[in-house]
Image 1 (cartoon, rainbow, N blue to C red):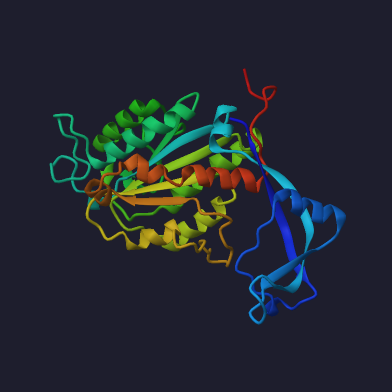
Image 2 (spheres, rainbow, N blue to C red):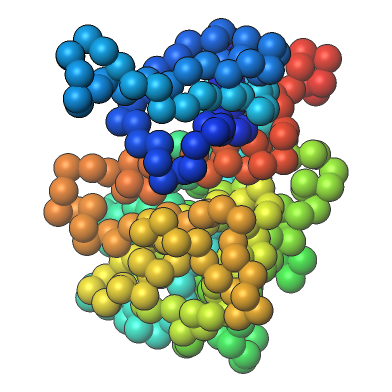
Length: 330
C-alpha cells in the first residue's frame, strides 16, 4: 500500500482583527491555496454575508495568513507490518486465590476434560492466534502473578517453570505452560500488575534500543480481580507509554472491574503518575469477558480494536517509518 501524504497546517491565524470579533461557521480552501498563501506570504480576505444589505453583498471580516505549512507522510498499520515490523505477543495470567481451586469445576482455572476452554484459555487462544502471525519466531514470554512458587508469593514468575527463560513456542506452548503451572503453583495474592508491566516494559525498552522500534510488544493480562496496586500500576503504564508497548487486559469472572476503566483512559484523559507525569499516549485496552459473552463481538475484536491506533501513535511520535527494501532482514 502506498503511503498517503497529508498536509499539516501548523498555524492558521487571522490578522488585523481580534480573535473574538471573527466568527466563521465554515472556511473552505484547497491545500494548494493554503500552500500558495504560505509561499507568497500573502493573505486571503475573509467575508461573511451582510445582514444589513442585500443578500448578495458580503462584509470583509479579516484576512487569513498561513504562517507555517508542512507535509508529512502518514503511513498505515499495514504499511508497517508489510515492510517487516512485528508484533511480539506476551501473556500474564492471574494466579490469585480468588479464582478458586483449579481442581473444582466452579474455579475460573478449571480445565474441562471435554475440551471446553475456560476464560483464561479462551483469551489466550483468541488473541494469540491473531498476533502470532505478526511475530516471525513465535516465541512468546509468558508469566504468572499472584501465585506461590517455591514457598514464596511471586508477582511475576515464568509460566513454564524455568528460572531464567520466560519464552515458550507458539500459542500451544502458552497453553501447555499454563496447564502445567496449575499443578505446580499455589494460588495466593494479592493482585498486582506493576511487576509484570515493568518486566514487559524492560523488554520493550531493550528492543527499542536494538531494533529502533521495528518490534512492537503486546502484553495480554488476564485477571479475575480488581488490581490492588492501582497507583503503582498507573506509574508503570505512564513510564511504559514512551515505549513500543500496548497492554490488553481481560477481566474474567464476576468481579467489579470499575477501577479497570481508569487504566483504559477511554474518557480522553491520559493517566497521571504519582510524580505528576502524564502518559504520552494511551496504551491500555480493557475488556470484561462477561460483556463480550453477552454481545455479538468476539474477545479478540474487542481487545484489538485500539491496537493499530496505539501502534501508529508510537511510530509517529518517534517519526519511525516503515522499513525500506534495503532494511528488511533476509
